[in-house]
Length: 295
Image (cartoon, rainbow, N blue to C red; front, side, top):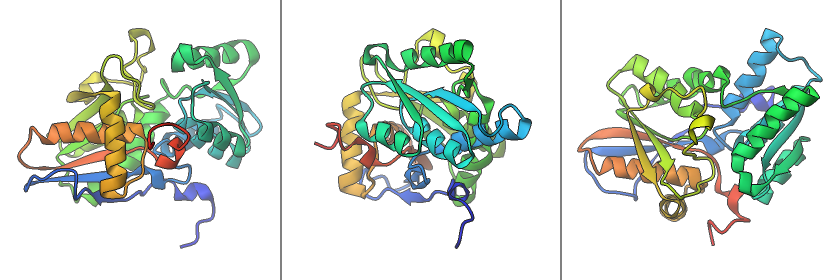
């Protein structure tokens, strides 16, 4: 198959069945491999949809300068897609983000602005709004942009429904911007309202890149709690250990948010006797090689 553009290869990621993480005769765990997207993560989908829809509406034009706060994967996706679409991109992220992420964004031509690690992603978000208000940048605001979750409503959800032939019973996703879980939940529940949607979030005191338990004032405005049936908390240690297990036992090389997603899926599986559980594998593990995740 020949694609006319790298952006045409976004989506249609495979489902891989877990064989070694648990044993329960009537339960299947399918891993949605979002690292197969060209930018290496699930964030390619909303990044593409946010920019494409804004261009189509005339909200932005080629040559405009965009800005966005990111913990990493969205930034890489935006850097790739903005470059392909003739837009300037500035990305703001905490200074403790992995070196691979910063270098990858710069490789795609984006400007990277680092904020204090002590201020977290919240500090990056505050600076993004300041640049919008004081310097004329265009802010995509993935935390409040309906084009974020609608990307998953239009692509990720239908792919899961298609590839399971409508047999999926549970969907599990890490929650960051919450775009993935909002979009997939909306689509799947339109097909079968009995499908259970489960969100993974960190236990108090745990720091898991890509998953957040937001302070009340920073909860993404696209989040609708009624679209999540259950929230399962995971610790930093559990997420990291599951990332290592995924690599060693399943050959799935992924980061900590994926570890958190699958650790939550296994906690869910302990409570059910039958079903088909789909869990999101958010990205690829090579993005974490400079961290201590894989030793």
